Figure 1 (cartoon, rainbow, N blue to C red):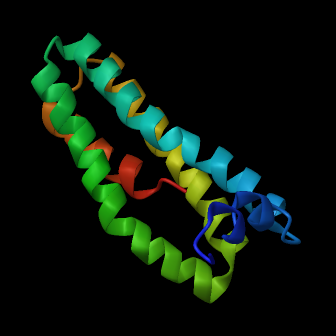
Figure 2 (figure 1 turned 135 degrees about the vertical axis):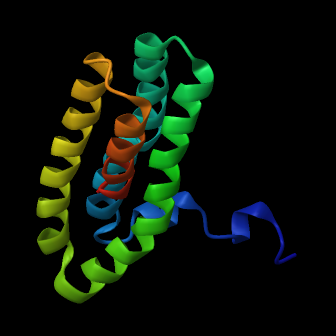
Length: 125
């Protein structure tokens, strides 16, 4: 029987592939902030505005901008290399998250929170 579980390649074989761990571990660590960013935006905006609806809308803007820009970031990384795209992206993301946080804590108008959410999501490395 060729369909038994023992005849199929598994994760063990995949992880024994040379270079697999050097790709897997940084990739896993790099994806941790995605969910935390959205949850953090919801908690911050809800705390400062008192509205879960507004908080969800601001987080949704960040999420949609992330989804729209991520494929373009992948294209750029393929064309120019990961480092050339990642370093400016991290700097932009840090500044964007800082701006969104500062605006929320300063009770900025909602349009400013929505405007700051766009580069916050779009610059996720």
